[in-house]
Structure formats: structure tokens, C-alpha cells
Length: 336
Ligand SMILES: [Zn+2]
Image 1 (cartoon, rainbow, N blue to C red):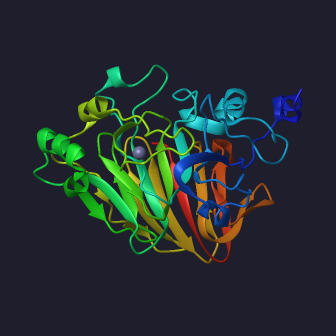
Image 2: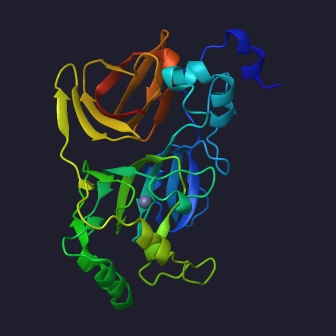
């Protein structure tokens, strides 16, 4: 029996930090070693750190305290009310998947299905809307999000054969702090040394449209494409995807900007040097420290948050105080 189960009757949840799950990706690099405290495995390219995942194949594991060693799925099952609050009857699996991406090379040009295409979504998975907050970028880094006006199914298909697909994509020259929204159905990619934080629906359904001629060194083969499925998902015409202008909600005691507000997630950026509130009554929140450091105060106990740290605040923690050490920038994520 695990520690957490022995005290289940009167157990209280506390702010939860999980071990990152590093993923080999041929387009990845080694930059996440400068962002996350857990050491990167091996010396190959690591493209993704899954920092909060309730997926059957990859479960986040609690890194500290009485629940250390338990998976997010187990915590969801044992403490549905305490963790999810008013959302507990709607979600039996944590509905968001959170990652840092280190795109050293370009990712495949890809698209994810919306709920309008249930036939393209495997059983147990969902549609996938996602969004990025740029953490680091270089001159020459790329983000492409959405189609340029005038793009049609036929000229887009022709561009795959010509290798001219970028002529049809909206180009963003990324810089740290940029916020990019990728609703399901939006053609997108990124790379050439850009690091982003990614929030997405808990889904792994990706259709690759184009892969730049990359050969996977592990298999010595190009990765498979799913062009027909991708075309079925692409929203041709107007889209609300792309670079987002932050909306300032408050400036005191901290600056609070809303970056994303969609059916699947809401995300704010918080910047301050005096203590400010985080978390919310009766619902879970996720905090991601992207600059500076500080501590989350819960029940008289401080929980340290440095750059790259991710904390899940259970619903029963309610509103907590965040005490920056100097100045800190956090992302706070809610489930609508
Ligand atoms: Zn994607």
C-alpha cells in the first residue's frame, strides 16, 4: 500500500509537482537542460518534456510529499473532488496535456482534428486545440500558424509536391513572450531553435502534411505522412489562429494578462514582485514559472517555484499567495 492510500480518509491534497517525461524527437535539441531541473537523459535530441500528462502511455508521476510515486491518473481517481472541485463530474481524465518543446529543427507541417471530424479521432482520444508561449527564440527561428489568403486545397496540395508549402503559411518571427493560438484545423509548425511552452487538449492525434525531407536517424526512413487525413481536417478560409495580442486585465498587485481563452483552456501571464494571488476556489489551476522564482504558500507551507517548474494546484487549495523572490513571471492555466 502506498503512503497516500493509508491516510486517504482524511488526506489533504497539496500543490503537486510531477517528474517531467522527456521524449526523443528527431527535431529536438538539448536546450531543455537549461530550463528544467531534472537532468536530460542520454545525449540524443530531446524535443519534448511532458510536464503534466494523464495519458495511458505516459503518466506524470508525483515528485514529492505523501503522494510521491503516484500517477496523475491515480490521484484523479482517488481524489476527484479534492483535485477537480466543480469539474470533477465532467472529467475523469485530466483534460489538458502540458509540455515544453525544444524545436532545434523544423517539426513536420501538421494539423490536428476538431470535434467536427469524429471519424478521424481514435476511440478514447479527443480533438486537439493547442497554444504556445515562446520561451526562447533566435534570429532565424520560425513559427508558421495558419494559411495565407488565397490558399486552396488544390494549390496547397501542389505545394507539397513542389516543396513550396511555406509560401502558403502565415509566418511569425518568434520572440520570447509571443503567444500563438492553434485551434484544431490550423496548419502549423515551428523550429530552427525555438523553445515554447505548449498547452493542449489531452490528445495525441496529429496528421503530418509535410516533413521537409527529414530522415529519422533511428529508422533511416522518412516519417510517414497522413496527407489525406490532414486535408480533411484543414479549415480553409478565415481562422482565429495565429499570433495573439495579450489582454491586460489588472496591473496591481501584479500584471495579469490573458493570452488564451477558448473552449478547452484559459491561460494568463502574471508578472509581479509583490505577493499576489494564484489559484481559484473549487477548481484546479496549473502554474508554470517562466522567469524568476518565488514560492507558493499553501496551508502555511512554502512550495518553491523556479524557472521551468510546473505546479498543479488542487481545487481544495483554493486561492493561495505567490511570493516572488525579486520578480517572477508565471503562467496560470484554468479549465473552462
Ligand atoms: Zn501541433
